[in-house]
Image 1 (tube, one colour):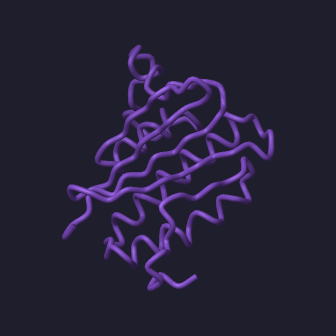
Image 2 (spheres, rainbow, N blue to C red; image 1 turned 135 degrees about the vertical axis):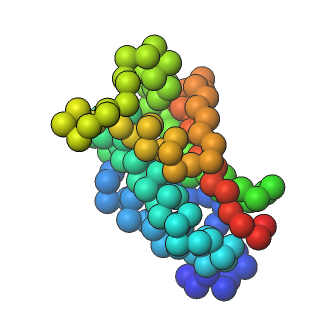
Length: 149
């Protein structure tokens, strides 16, 4: 569907918990970038953060169990493009590990280990990051500053 269609991109994207469904996210985000004149730098940040969050939900939240629902909504306001991701996976507070002080940032490349860097990455690229446990799942909010809105 072309980005010039006023109903595209839809405010909600519904995915199933399989990595293949992540390919549906990129045209949706690109349509948002076209519609709202989002810079290449911000588009990169959005794609990076959404990929990290969504792939973690599929791999770790649902533990590879397919056909579980994930929704991604967007809203625009006050100079921010805000994405809200909801799932029905077991609760996982992405900030708990950092709140305990257990994960100091690596100071050299040798200290960098695979895994566990997703929240740090999202904090760096998103202007705002919030988590809320739901009665039956999780809600992660990622906001990105955009110019000219």
